[in-house]
Length: 184
Image (tube, rainbow, N blue to C red; front, side, top):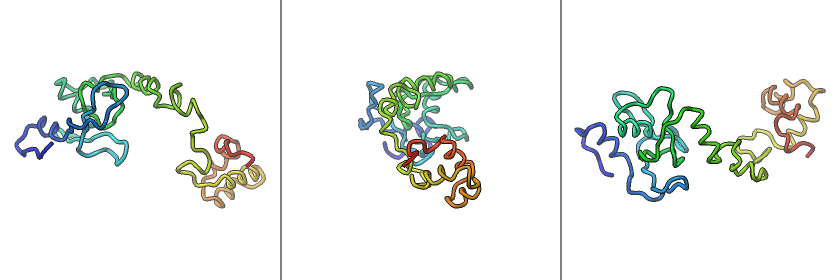
């Protein structure tokens, strides 16, 4: 994977940014290693590869499918990964499905909270709850205080005191959120 000449075709420029040599990424869902897009990602971690083709911004795996098949996929179809590696552009790892088929594939591979193979479904104790959750603004004690004060102190007052929205206070008070820490 070296530098691609300026006069290279769009296909040569695209495939020049693909690492076909690395065997570091082997998915349990396929028998062959992934070809990783080394161009720009859509976000720093977990995003899809982004390429510019014919003046339009395209996700790299979709462009790989287009170049391999000679046409854009139908408008109602999504280009999906057999390997579940978002930066993979290997053509035989890609397939077309409508949105429902893509979601069914996600569930079947245990990548959703609905799939029976999801680790959290098998062992809910693995889930970060309450203040252990990565984006938690409150502590378990804060949520318990909100719950005990709910209904006697206005939601707006509790929201102001704890730096959250009144709707968050309501969800805690009605035990729609922070249920796992109730009564602590």
